[in-house]
Image (tube, rainbow over all chains, first blue to last red; front, side, top):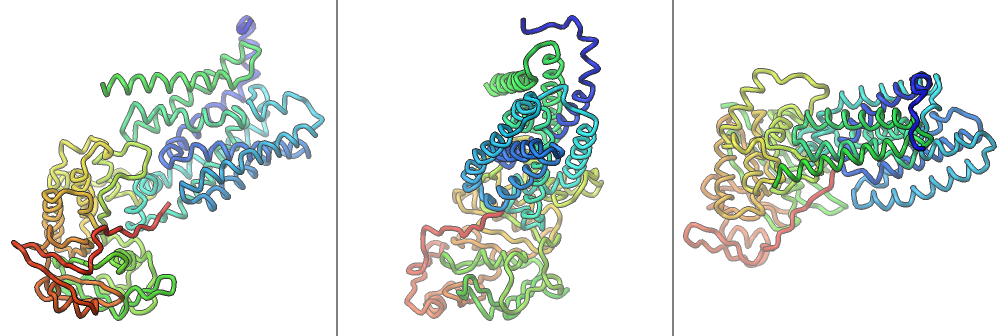
Length: 272
Length: 266
């Protein structure tokens, strides 16, 4: 049986931390996703997440803080992709080179790791009950940094993303902003990995924003919708996973994919 | 009258060790409309980039309102070529205009009353009332360029730099966009530097021409510069300037497939 909600009231307190983290990641993913779409960096997100996974696995092996490890991995990948792949054409190949390397490194570290096996898979496919208080703390700090920074640079970053030539002419520091965005993206990926896992970060950082762009053209409505979609996916995913024996990620990814499909249908009906 | 809006003194630009132009002197007055002409690679766009502070001069100086130019001056407006943005996200006409007003600002300060008045005025002036809610990806080249001109003039700059804004437009649209730019710039006494490879659509609004060729240049009214004699001296080879029904054709120098030098910013 896939679902069993009979002792749901006892299970729910166990995932309080996950729900809080999930809500924060939805805000982070929904907002960052708008710029991921805008700057055409979906594939880069995947590359960053694999290196973030490697960082997390290595710290798990040597007994360090996993969040710290994934942040380091993320930032290294984000900065390498940001510098070597400044041009969109080169970015894809750099990402494709980094991705298997990160994944391999992570798997190596995990196979050497002697601890609980659920920790291993968690980093790849996500976990719900694994969020402890120190993790909650570090993810909160990361999320706060990401959201506040993003809100401050929102307008110039939008200008630089949609209209870089004119933005540069108007004095927007387009290059500094693109490095800054890579750092923000790295942090967002590192935080997201803790819950949805490295393989499925895209469902939080890309799919909600991609769906939002389908149904709205307004620069105000798009980020709000994107956050709402991410929120429904994560919180819904956690609540469904709780009543089943499956990991959280299939639920999160299915809900977010479903939202995307509905968004496409709505857009299609509207434009007909 | 006040002094010149823009003063270029003994300017020299080198790119990769090659001298693009040198000893360039140019004073631009309020309301002046200057066309910058020249063959491919003669440094037309580079001149705009130097004025924007994006390319450093090897020698000489450029002053805007008697102050040394700096990157991102609020007093300069910029109109790019007519082409779609690289964005994968929808951006509407009105968003493009608002970016011209507050796109450089950090944070989320609500638009001031002055800004709203400016916006309403410009949307009227460019005839964009209906179009403003449309994504620019669904606009024609001419429609998009109307918003581009609006975006450049909305902050009421003293100097407007236009880099081949008419390329990829048909002849009627070219004239309409150039008219709009000329009219809107004059409203606030702004000067215009207009890079183009075809002077004809703007011939009746041009005050002076700056013709760049092989590191040298010639400045004057269209009638002074666009002659076989001046251009032959400039290029050092015989050039024919043909005038036919009010149109000017330069033969022998121009690369008809003028590819615009485009640096990538990301």
